[in-house]
Length: 254
Image 1 (cartoon, rainbow, N blue to C red):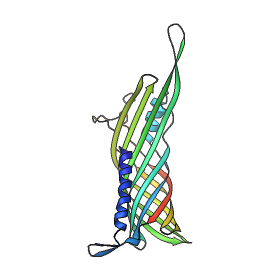
Image 2 (image 1 turned 90 degrees about the horizontal axis):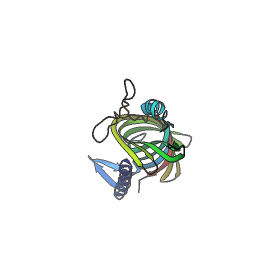
Image 3 (image 1 turned 90 degrees about the vertical axis):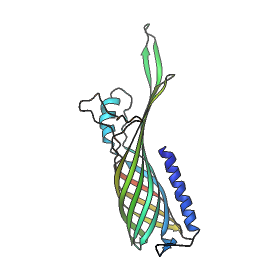
Image 4 (image 1 turned 180 degrees about the vertical axis):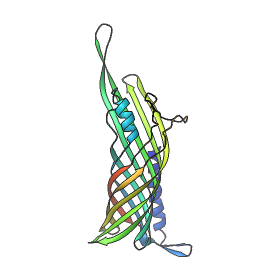
């Protein structure tokens, strides 16, 4: 569902940009809308995650001990799409979408002996998939430096997270669990734009995201709680951490 929403949002960004560029000037409350101030950014990169509850409580103390998951979720890919508009010569207002993902997987073989001492082997596969879709509103301040336009920016985000757990043995089929949750966050970053050939520029960015959801719940509203532990914590998603990204920026002027 999150992946479909991301694709839909990016498609809407593309067609919106095409519709806007078909009109040379738009009046907003009596103020001319300058197409030279509008841009579309498409990029991706690497993000680092805290994921403290899932990593420290679930993977380390429970699933790792019994061999289901032993790899912590500490990093993953990021994809983003943004439309930005220069509201002032050195200030822009951006709205966009960022998709984050992290996976822990285990593919092993389990040995079982029957009453006669004969060994039997079963393939065991497990996968813990986490993802988050963040709708962001950001502001950036620009300043030129040695032929490159640098920027510093920050903003807020509404986050929707999802966790899917698949655990299964050969010939038995997988047993699946799905949990979702929402949350708010913020992001701050530094970066720059380097014009390749107008209207296309390359951008690079590094910063920190604080993206954390509330308690994860299944479709019946039951929280994912580790009842086997004393003072059992409720699981959530914490995609907070540093990130590095780059991509293509396209001026939407005619």
